[in-house]
Length: 587
Image 1 (spheres, helix red, strand yellow):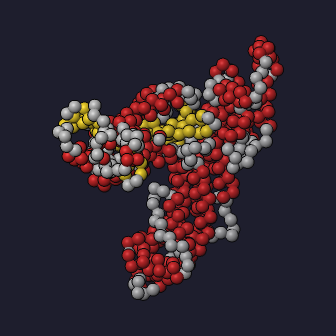
Image 2: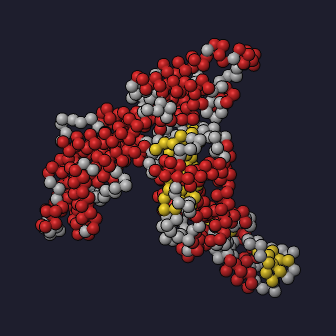
Image 3: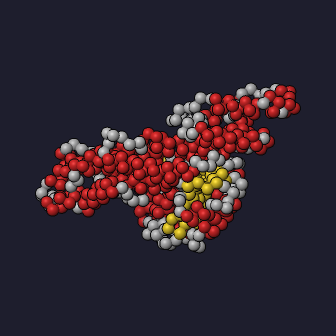
């Protein structure tokens, strides 16, 4: 092999000579050599444009794992680096919900060439294969995680894509590492009719495929009759989404004649500013003059009751700017102003009803989270609404009191009276295990006793050898932090058994007499610190506190899915839709 020391051209720093051939040190390609550097220079200009072949002698001594461009050292694109780049691109597409055709874009290729001149951009087919591989790896990883969990809850909901395909989403929730964890299991197309039988079969099959048979505590869903019926003959408890139930109750309040007229008038007013460029620009000008926030008006959507609260709050904030625009004849005709202006009684009702709506909005948002305990708050929250926030007041107008009475009556019918007949329901047992609400003051004395009796029955049925992730494992983790118990003491404890000292009853009674923690503290952290003292109850806490109060986690998938299945990706197969949603939500 000839040495490059006697070669004058800088191009020799990037080639090795072997008889009548030269080999590029960057990409390992072999070229013919005929006592001329022309072929090598052409190769460098076409394949490695950013490399400075006319570098100094000092620069020639740099290792071939790097090359210079504009005075900076850049790592060479090795096969390993190219592999990692391709994987990162596929992850980016899933995480940012980009179309697969993104890799074919000229702009993307231009940026990529600037960053990695020696990297060959992947094709759509390559990216699809990588996404499929990432999906398989993530599914395997999640199944391993779920295999270590003793109790899970699931939520489900269905939606229809732009391509009119019907999908059913299932999410799962459990407690691990002292945290409430949530994952999207699948978003599968359901070609059959959404009958109760088909949905039930779909749920059972999915639970078995994910290795969750016998682990599901409850399924949370909306109030649709087909999904309610599908959850009747199953191994888990059927729970209606509380957010959906609360929305139905609030919508009943909106149907009251006076509030209905107010909502209609406000929606019409907001619609005028949304559809008129002149009115919208005039509003911006009035906002600057009156030093009001530059906020757009918000429209009411019937499927989201809290949008009514947002609409009224924004109108109240922008009242004087709106009034100024409507009274300006250069921007608003007199005839339009007469039909759009809100009367003083409307503005007064808005001011009075806003605190009520804000309270209901807080209740909805408090129960819609995925990463904290929520099911135990359902009945305490309903009780607080009925006993405090929805109580009529002589200082408020008849319209607001009518709204309160209607919502309260609907809540009592849909939640309070209907569901308080069963002391063994998950939300009640969860409240009894939640150190914030275990006093059960929101129940009458008879119901309080019934709930505790149901819980104590389950408590007594637990033996030490069946406690899994919820009890024994957590207790063992707590034990590791303390000094180990001498072996002879452990043997004596096993010899006499738990019943010898009535420790089981002591644990139960001690838990009942423990003071409650404040409502804003995390019950999972409390159980983390106290599982060693209450091992069996900790086991039950893991069972019931993992259940979400709403099916919002499944509904949240729709927004991501709507961006994935769009007009740029209308040819995506249902299988790839499932993969992309799964990766997007579980990364």
